[in-house]
Image (tube, rainbow, N blue to C red):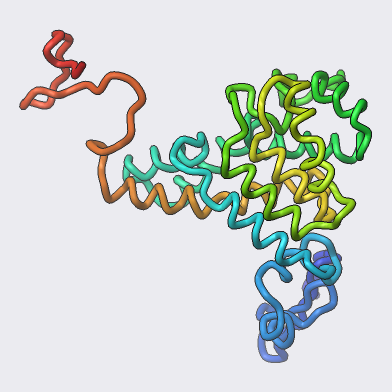
Length: 275
């Protein structure tokens, strides 16, 4: 007798086709008929929230997530995860390698998903206690348990290399606050941003803004980290494809540009370096 194998999931249920038990006749996400109901009536961000949270999203939540997705969709070619994808693109490797490069670099604790995860953890701990925030931002890694991550060297959610808060972050904060609960994380962040920036000595980063928005959407550190990784991939993909078409000669290089002689070999002579 053949052994019957079962999977266990609170997210997904499938009913098999009568003629083919390996094909689904109906799929249910959190109890909702995906192809008979969700796909017909819901939007992409409603579906995402249903999968991640396990219930129909509340009023305004899909719009908040959609606008956050637009805000972080393309971090731009200066951002490390996008640069990693561009490197893969210019090398002519396969598409999955470009996305994996973006995910690997974008998972870190300098602007990446690990920093965002730490931020959400601080929200769960500090809530709206300004003094507690001030203490924890300067000591975010007081847990002595062994971990794969080294202690953070800067206040999570803030840019240690910044001097002023970038205009896009201020614009995005103003936009997202208008879509979030009046007594939520984004509203508190906007009211206390300047005081927090003065305390840590540098400006708010996109990771800090995104963390507050995800807290208002009810995400925990793991859920928020996953969404942050996913929602930043479109820009990495677009830049990787563009760089693949443009080739290595137009790849952005930080520092003195090095010319090659006609034979294609490098030379160390001063004439070979553009001033």
